[in-house]
Amino acid sequence: MSEDQFIVFTYPSLVNDLKLFMENYQYSLPIIPPDEPRRKFTPINKRLCRFCGKDSSATTFRTDAHIIPQLLGNKYLVSDYECDKCNSLFSAYESNLTESLGAYRTVFNIPGRKNKVPKYTSPGDGLVASPNSDLNIPHAITIEDNTGTSFEIDDKTGNTVISYTKNGFVPLLAYKALLKIALTLIDEKDVSSYSEAFKFLMSDVYDEKCAEVAHVHQFFGSYRSRSHCYLFKMINPAARLPTHIFQLYFENIVFQSFYSI
Ligand SMILES: [Zn+2]
Image 1 (tube, helix red, strand yellow):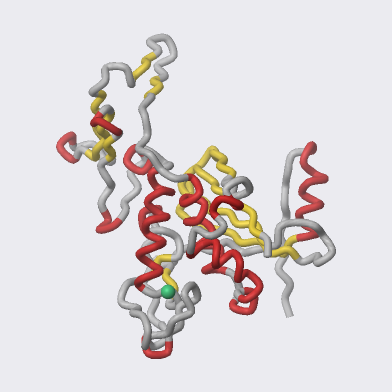
Image 2: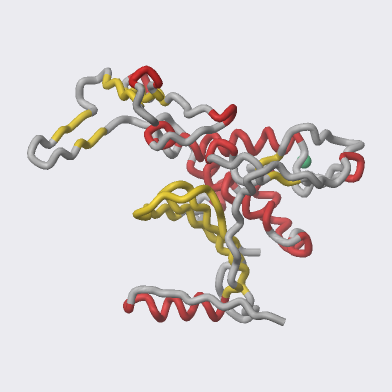
């Protein structure tokens, strides 16, 4: 029998917070999209959608259901318990999450669907960022400033600040995009405990109530990594803490949110 060991480092000022976390949450291995397509799936006639509860006699399972959005660089991490109808509802949530990133995916050359880096256009064509293959420079992009005010270049330091207005998005729907990933990853045996969270995800019945507590914390790291996520489960039933903590790493951004039964 072998035991996994890991060493965790933190800043001195955060030692107590880390202890609190380690005492109350089970360590989660990172969930990383595989490099190759998955081969084994539940046969379609035996599938059941975790989100709407319908089986293949009442819904369809034709589309690959990406657990982490494809628009965030995930190609092959897919589930076989999300039907097409739910998948298209979640795509709308994912669009809000990706709009919250503005021109980021273009500037950092993140291929989305069809392996293409997307072009980004801000409202009224104020800023247009697009991949430029004519320059013969790997990962070159062109950024057009049609307002004349987007670029602030500091001649002394060489730093350039680019300001622009992002396209509109609904933060609550971006939150739901992350909640969907977490609810896809929870253990099958925890699904019934989260029935209210599923209801919140699938309808607008709790939108008004939950809007105040549905926060996404966003951090920026100093290095880029491929998309992956963590789902930490609370193990101390007496603690008054969120039952799951979810983190999604995308390039140098970390999205974190908390969920409770
Ligand atoms: Zn469904």
